[in-house]
Length: 95
Image (cartoon, rainbow, N blue to C red; front, side, top):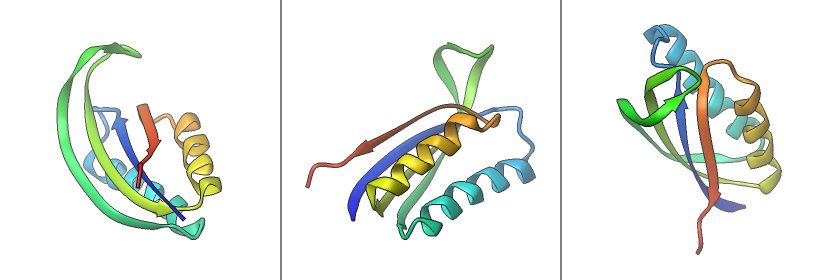
């Protein structure tokens, strides 16, 4: 198990219910891959530094997790194909 952290930027036009479903989906992918979420911090809606996919704002989510590298790869794959995600980044923490 390795420590990872991720910042995910969701579509700012998502309704609250759909945003909750998207966040739950992130947690499920981590837990289904034998990982654990150690911290979730909702940064809320913020202005983007530059326009991405026609959006100037996004809903930011910060996630810390302990998970095998295969689960981090699966989370990356799921986030890439999700229409609700504008941008994401997953990095391995140095320990």
